[in-house]
Image 1 (cartoon, helix red, strand yellow):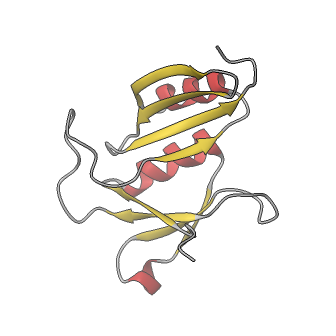
Image 2 (cartoon, helix red, strand yellow):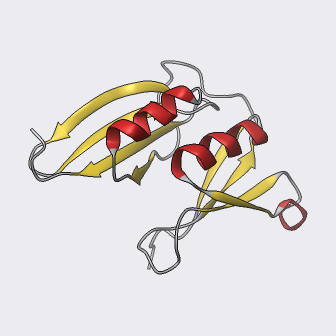
Amino acid sequence: MGRLIHFEIHVDDMERAKKFYGEVFGWTFEDWSDYAGTPYFGAVTGNANEPGINGALMQRKGASPQPGQAMNGYACTMGVEDYDSTETRILNLGGKIALPKHALPGMAWQGYYIDTEGNILGIHQPDEHAK
């Protein structure tokens, strides 16, 4: 046991975060606030017949992460088909580069970004020719 089955991204501005993740990755959201007792939107990240998990955006209960602060949590990495167009969407929607695109030689392109809420996220495009 111990398999990851759900994630939560803590956000300051729910509508801004829904727009960011919806437009960058195509996620859809379901309002589970009544169930959770706090602003909480389930994130549907893809088709149920594909590998992956769903999660949620939840209202942050404390201070936002500060630039340069060590990470206190997990970094989620999303698989993408086109690294460069995904990066463009991230930047156009207010995200920032945390660690630029780099090759995982013979495997993939990887990079990390700061979302509109100050959280770190990764993107990963498989490519056996990455150098």
